[in-house]
Length: 262
Image 1 (cartoon, one colour):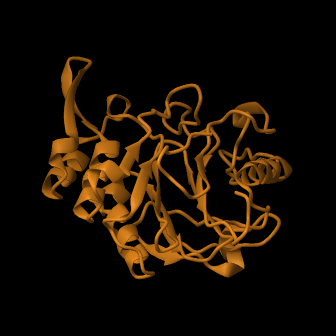
Image 2: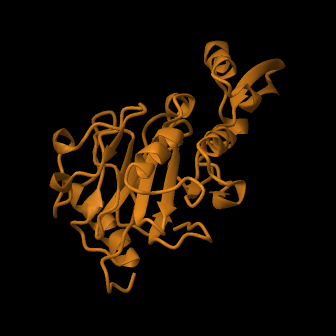
């Protein structure tokens, strides 16, 4: 598991190492949806979740996930989704970011190329987590998450953010239409023209774009940590590398109960 050095809240960005899943899901898979008709054993997914939460000092019923749709909506973590056992997708809130100030809650984001973002304001006891693919990045889901945290008492200048592993610019070619949307949306400096097959195809640097969005939201540069890892590396699941037949990593952050040892 990867961790941001300056974070005080229990948190982790998982790799694919150390779990119990098999086959194309080997080994620490957190996704429970079918991929081209193939689905990981739900018992393996549940055990992977239990192992990770236990390592962070939380019980198996503390994890709150979302029905992620590559949007920009931010919700407050809902108690109904924090329960033991597998939570059906239909019961999850549909959003791509969530926040909470409730101790004992672990916010989770699933990813396999999109960027997971974790945020904390220890002074206010408020945390956030967001899923930022190109649509979410362009829609400034990171900034919306900061706004949602401030509504719970956080202050942007105190918030620390961690940008986890995602697909690097070198591995992320996009079409001209998507690139132009980033230019029009004020994120054009993160469109790179890399020569590939003798053409100057645009590539997106989503990590740097999310840093810009966080800075626009009022975070200090020294409070933003970027993992610098690309999900096409063997240590991670990658939707693009594996043509969609792959698992999902978990990025999670929690607020410990008073007196807990996490």
